[in-house]
Every structure is written in C-alpha cells, then in structure tokens.
Image (cartoon, rainbow, N blue to C red; front, side, top):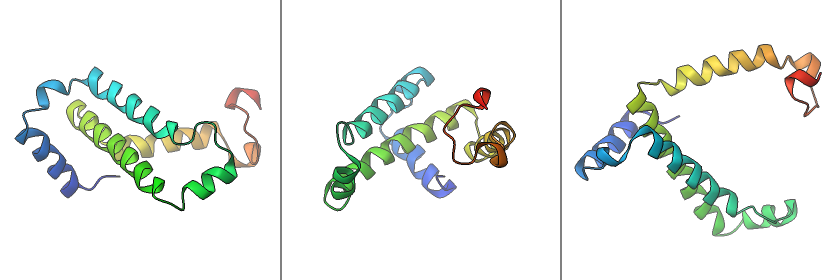
Length: 115
C-alpha cells in the first residue's frame, strides 16, 4: 500500500501540473489497464525460465516502473472516489477467506463455484 506521505507527494505532483482535470475515474481506470498491459508485455511469450533470467537483469527495473505506474493510478482513483484502499482490500480478503476456505481449496485452481 502507498503511505500517506507518498500519497500526498503524488497528489501534490498532480496538482502542480494541473492534471486533475484529466484524471476522471474512467480515464484512471483505463490508465490502470493500459499500464497493466505494458507490464504484461514484459512476460508475453516467455517461459518460466526466461522470466527468471529476465528478472536478473535490467528488465526488472522496467517492470518495477510499470508496477509503480499502476500503483500511482490506483492511488489517484481511490483518492478521487473516496475509497480507503487498505480498508477495501482487507474487506475483500475477508470475503475471499469465506469464499475460498483453505481446507477445501488448498492446491486447487478451481473457481469458488467449482468445488
């Protein structure tokens, strides 16, 4: 999660550039998807071994920058919609714990309605 200190820096960064007007919820959501696609592109068509090797070199920095971009847009979106990311993530984890009890799903990739 992004700390309040970093969140303030992000919001100040955006404000200093007058970018709030471009950051509508739809556009932020779209930007998250676009950045996620850029992240995924680094892994496309690669085997597990190729990925392991790739993460040892400079590409790890490129991947980390894509992850940061996603985190930034997600932080802006949550701020603008009045969502507490830590709270909603904790609530979703509680829901998933009920939906996917460890004793029933351990080692299985099936969806909750398939077990």
